[in-house]
Image (cartoon, helix red, strand yellow):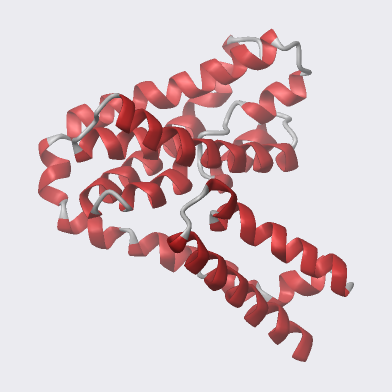
Length: 227
């Protein structure tokens, strides 16, 4: 029990510390999405604690994913009038972006002459991790590879998204939210909230719709594109 408590409290302490550090020095290398897992893995390897023990001790944190997702409904409700007003634009933009993410992923993988299994693993990278893993598994992909690609997609979205926003002088919450939520799922949504609650709410919707579109369309697209 003591070891489980150490795993739980240690994880919370690492994430809290990294998040505080990221607020002071907002650099990609210090983002909690990247640095926290690296530090935790290093701590497990150094201490000899098995993954099964760590997983059991931190099960409470994993269980909070559900309530955390439901909590996104609060900013959605606050900005419901904005979502209703721009529902068509948001829907069309997300649909286009989600489909293009799958098509371009398959095209890139085939251009690089990757195996069919890697093509299937790469295709759902723009969806949230649970959906991406489900799509990858259904189509014969490698879940571990898909999880890594989802993480990399989120990190790239957090870096390139703000650069494009500044370069293209994108000022609207709708455009910012849709772009970040569609292209970089949860990582992009976290970044969108830095621009404001409205952008974050729209990004949340975009993230959810993207996951739904990829879940429904990816198997058909992979079949049609030869993936």
